[in-house]
Each structure stands twice: as structure tokens, then as C-alpha cells.
Length: 232
Image 1 (cartoon, rainbow, N blue to C red):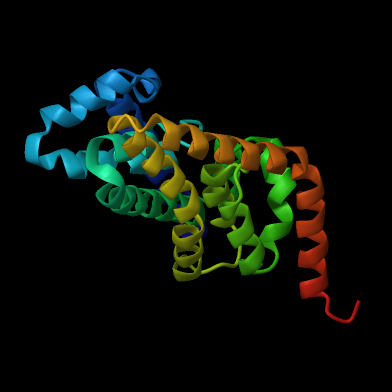
Image 2: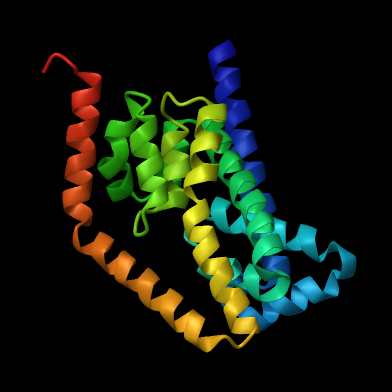
């Protein structure tokens, strides 16, 4: 009976989450809101002194709603608030969103997560669930081209504690946050030379990672197996 009650509580929590999120997206005008820079800027401007909190909220939402890309909001952080404040606000929002996604996964369990995360992603990173693999998780969050927001849900099913996960995701996301935020700041300041160099370096890095992504994933698995089976 107690087990059945827990299942119903988890189902209710999930339904409330989906309903609340659907209402928020409706009020914002749908997922398309996150692809429209002018609408986002208009929304933040309408908040006045609460603009900082609004930006953090948007960063949280784009992590929890994993298919929403974070590049637009990341660049806008630098464009609107400058590099230092932009990095700070993005880091707070991304960290909070990652923690929420991780906890949603931990509370609702694998059957629910499998409905939220692409089965191919679940299969690719299932090996991370059997051991802590903190170093590998750090690399996955650090490198571009990996589905970081989906990983929050996948890792919520594993053995990492919330504290370990938060420390890893917060520090590893900083590189991408810095690049996007400085890109936005350079755009606002019309420093097109610096923007071009930063963009070229970021694109080259992303292309290299994408070209060798499969090899990197095989290396991750091999390293993971070696660390969890030291006698081999």
C-alpha cells in the first residue's frame, strides 16, 4: 500500500509539473518565445528592477525544458548585463535549473524520465548510472556538443549526490557560459573583431569535438570501465 501511495504521489507531482510548465509556456507565447531575441528583451525590460530575477528564471526554464537551446539566453546575458554580471546571472540560473532537473528525475524515477528524454540519449549515457563517474560527468558538461540539459535528468537516476552533481555541473558549465556571455558583450559594444575571433575559436572547438564525439564517448566508456574495474 505504501509503495502504491508513493507511485501516486510521484505521478501527481509530475502532472503538476507538466501543467505548471505548460501554463508558463502559454503565458510566454510558447517555446518560440526562447527563439525570439526581441520578445525576450521586451519581457525582461517589462520587469524593470526585477530584470535580473527574470533572466535567472529564463535560464532555469531553458534547462528544465531540455529541448530549448540555451545559446540565445546565454548571449543575451552578456548583451544586456555585461560580461561579469551576465556570467554571474547565467551561472546562478543554469545551476538552479540543473539542480531542479536532477531532483525531478530523482523524485519521479526512470519510467517518467524515459518519457522526457530521447531513448537514444538514455542508451548512450546509461553506463554513467551504475557508478559515480564524477570526472567523466565533468568532461561531458565541459565539452560542447553533448546534451547537457538532458544529462541532468539522466544523472538524477544515478549514484551522484545532489551536492556532487551541483558542484560538477556548475564548474563545468562555466567555459560555455563565459564564451556566450563575452560574445553578447562584444556584440553590444560593437567590438566585431573580438566577436569574430571568439566565434571562430568557439566554432573550431565545437567542430573538433563533434568530429571526434563518437571517439570521445568510446574513450569515456573505456576510462569509466577502467576506473570501476581497477583489476582489469
